[in-house]
Length: 221
Image (cartoon, rainbow, N blue to C red; front, top):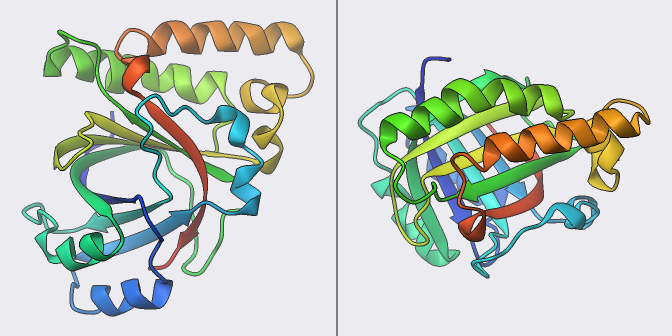
């Protein structure tokens, strides 16, 4: 398991702020070492087949801030979140599979954002074991995942989540189960991957309270 870093995740439920507005805000906060802004667009809309919305509360965008200050709770983001119907989540992030992106780069595939509640009755230790320790290998080997980051939510507003998962997929995975779950056109391998991923996910995810949407991501710092 990777050592966690502090991250702030802002989910926007209205319009998404412009990069220039976020840059101006970040200019006063040197503790932010990386910033990524994702939003829905025509490219991410191609991946609509993967959307899950049981809470009827899908975000329209996501701002991810990596920090070098473990004490930062994101209160300085309040004006931004109010202006754009946003919710801030302070997280401990693990990155088992990093996706290098240069500042200004737009990822040409999609970011799958999964915001989940744990299964009822799971302790923190059980969630850590099932999700961070055991599910990680399953997720990166059963899917064509190019980048994988697990954000354990420490605090946040409504809707409340236990975890926010960020996974990066190639463009062809937007509309193809084979491209999403298996290399090439191996149908048997694809379904084996689906079954293994589902069985692992159901150990800790409450699927009735898990939101999934694909977005287009850009590194802005």
